[in-house]
Structure formats: structure tokens, C-alpha cells
Image (tube, rainbow, N blue to C red; front, top):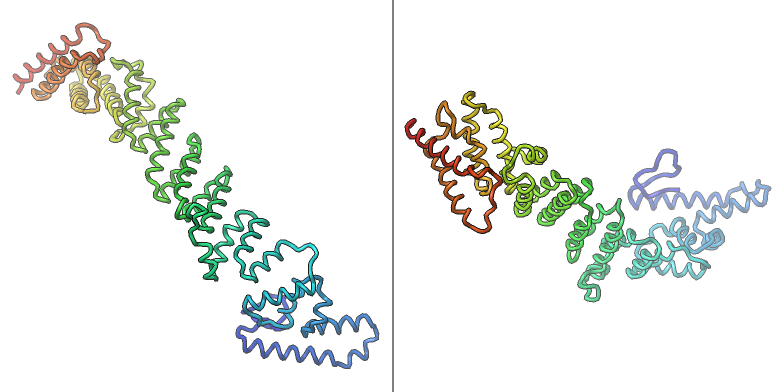
Length: 432
């Protein structure tokens, strides 16, 4: 039997034709050959009645005999398909196909029709509502979400029907409604929620709002889920949502004891307000005098901040103080002037930095007394010493305010620092 198609898989019988004229010519030739077989002398030699009748019936089916086709089929869909296969291979147009289907349904009705048959009738009748109803009833939300794409592909009427904004649906179209429904199904599945953004992003009216809600609902305590949420925000240009999610993650980790993770995510979100609040908490933990023993428990967190803490808020002070403390430990009285000079430079950087809290000025200067009283030579020049004296003067004025927090230092700390700075200033003037 000839076939109108480019080629056949290996092992399958038949001849292929790519153009309609060639196929028609081969089709007629093939039918003529079948007719010759029907008139062959072979039938006189075939003594077995059932074999002879069975072969003759098969030939009539291949010739498209209506009676034979009807007798050989069990329901209207079989009769319908065999009609196209053996009698009218070039039937085209949904209207004629629908009328033919109605005719065969009357000839061979089905007592309990399959759901596919109802769907086929809806397609042949070009009834978009019936097709959507059958898809929704029989195949679930995935099928109906994608059936809309097929229905709008070849029908202007269906495209208008499915894309039209409807007030009773909140101003969205039927197409968007079914995509939202399927996205909701995906969102409720812990393994499938990552696919939902693809559908939500295609919904112009309500999709992006629901996508934001979906992302905010994801648990931030699981790093894989958190990273996936941030990646989705990047893909769909939801920068503000991504930043808020990182803020939520930072606060969650901080409140649950994961201080390093908390600071990291707040840094990623560039949340200077919360970082400054954390800095204030850390200052309380570390202590007003910043002693070595209470500072060690925060070494890991300070290390996380890195060498550059531009977005770390007040935490920048802790990192720079750690570096200063390390350099101060390398200094021994009267020796290693280079190490002492580096420590003095670190002190000046700390005192110049606006992130250094005023409450730590005096403790820093008190810890640096051996630098200010360095015997070999003055480690600070005139301008640097004047800077520290000015800081000390500001501190004296600030102590008059009722909200000033006094450092836990010996009573003579202030006078010791003032004397050391005055002495260093005199030596620096003589040096210069």
C-alpha cells in the first residue's frame, strides 16, 4: 500500500511518495491491482470456504467498501479511521471531518465512550470550551495549561477567546488562569516548586506578584533552597526581592546562632542598618575595654569580614581592631621599632576611621600607651599627635552627655593618655 511520507523505517512494507500527484497515481495503480486480485482465477482453486471469504473480505476492506468496513469495525472511531485509510485519504477540513464523525457515531454508537473520544469530538467540532472542559476533567492541570497553547496555534477565534481579559476572572484571561492554576500545583510540591516560576513569569497580570510570594515562602535555613531562590530572582530581574530574601536569611541565621552566616547574607544584601545593629551587639559582647580574652570568641566572625568591609557597617571596626591588636602583640618595649611603627600607623587608621565607635577611643589609646611612650623615638608626628589630642578633647566633651557610656578602665586612664600624648607632642616637635 503506497504511503505519502518522506520515508519508512527499515523493515516496514510499502512505498513512499513525497508529492500528492505521485501518490495519487500510485494509489490508483494499487487499487487496480487489488481489483484484479478480486477477479483472479485463484478463487476457483481455493476450496476452503472460510479462507476464501476471509481473503475476499480483506480485499474489499482495502478497496474501501463501506459495508465491509462497517462489518469489520467495532465502534465509530475505528470506522472513522478506516474510512480515511482506505476510502478518502485526502479528506481535509475540520467541518467535513466533524460531519463524518457525527454520521459514524450514529451508525456505531459506543455505550461507554472513552474520554479520548469526547476530546476528539470537541477538537473536530472546533469547540474550544468543550476541549478545555475535557482536558480539565480527564487529564488535570498540566494538560489544560499546555492544551491552551495548541488551541491558540491554529485558530484566530480560539486565540481571541483564550486571550481575552475577563472581569469575572479578575481581569486575567483564560490562558493565564490555567497557567496560574498549574503553577499553584507546582508551588505546593517541595520537589517541583522550582518549575513554577517558568509559568508564573508568562502570566502578565498576576504572575510576577505570585512569583514574589512563592519566593518569600521558601525556607531560608536550607542553603540549596536559598541559593535557588536567589538565582530565580536574578533570572527574572527581581533584585529587590533577592535582597529582601538575603536580609531574611541573614536575620534568621543570626537569631539561630549562626553568626557568620548571618553576617554574610546581610553583607550580600548590603543591609547596613542591620549590620550596624549587629555591630552594636558585638560591641556589648566584646566589652567596653575590648580585652583579648573576650575578643577571641569573635575571631572567626571577624575573619569572615575579610580585609575590605565596605558594606559591613560598624563591623568594619572589629576587623581593623583585630589587625591593630595583632600588630600590637608584635611590639616589645624598646625593641623592634619597625613593628612599633606599624602598630602606631594602625592606631591612627583606627582613630581616623568614622566606623570606630567613640566609646572605644579611650580604650584604644590606653592600650597604646607603650607606643605613645616609645623610648627610642616618637612614633607619631606632630599632626598625628594633634589628631589624637583632638579626639581626646571630643571625648572629654562627650563625657558630659547623660547618654555617654563610660569605658571600664582604671581611674587614671584618661590622665595617663593625656600625659603620654603631651609628651609625645613635645618630642615630635623637637624631632621635626
